[in-house]
Image 1 (cartoon, rainbow, N blue to C red):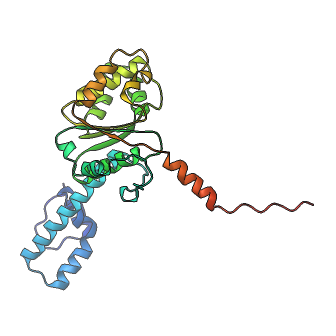
Image 2 (cartoon, one colour; image 1 turned 90 degrees about the vertical axis):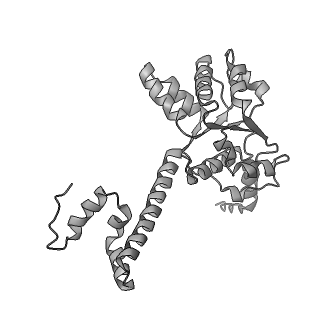
Image 3 (cartoon, one colour; image 1 turned 120 degrees about the vertical axis):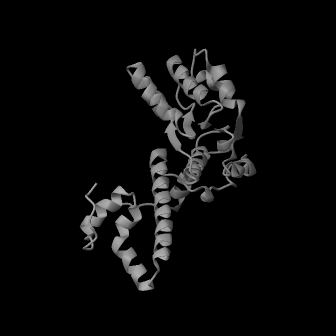
Amino acid sequence: MPPLRDGSMPMTNDELLPRLMNLKLLYLAEHLNDFVGRETKKRSSAQEIIEHLVELEIEENNRRMVASRLRFAKLGKYKAYADYDWNWPTEVPREAIEQLFSLAFVNEPANIIFVGTAGLGKTMMAKNLAYTAALQGHSALFVEAAEMLTDLGGQETPRTFKTRLNHYLRPKLLVLDEVGYLSYSSKSADILFQVISQRYEKTSTIVTTNKAFKDWGTIFPGAGCVSVLIDRLTHHAEIIQVSGKSYRLHESENRKQQTPPKPRSKEK
């Protein structure tokens, strides 16, 4: 911390900035000249300046916390929920899905399982829910099931395994994407069971899967914990079934139809 001044001479910006940063006055540190200029022009009283500064610092702190939660969530690119074509799936419980955005299931806590074939928006819905949770102050993390199981399965010591396991246990909302698109070993089934069972009745998990629960034995062939895993996952859960043809395939076919054919080169 820089030494205190006796106040006989005004500080320069170079002297003020480290003090503002130490006090976590991040908005003022970044916008010092603009803030002073505005308040001077308005001839604000000392009380008004303090009140305005407090409001701006609270807004800046909230903005930074939201940005930090979104970085941690690792959502990547995805379509906005408002752009979802509800008319494309043959079966989609729109009212039930829209109610999820109240995040009552996060506060309960309960789990959400999206079931359906590929290309129907399960991942998009899950990512939008995680985004909403992050905006509303909850920690959230999106991860593909294969990535998480590879990460945890690759830990070489109990200590590093516990550290990485805590990474997936800590978020208030964990999204496990694409459970069922690959087959896994019994070890992976045991790892997933640990994640689900240790989050059980403490935090919320969203799972997207292309397989009905009766077929989960094909995801973890030979694993003895599958039935118990499903029981823990679905005990406090809402299951959202989405049916129809792949919307991604539909969009791809539309693009092909809208793209004019390339002119043939003239033969010499």
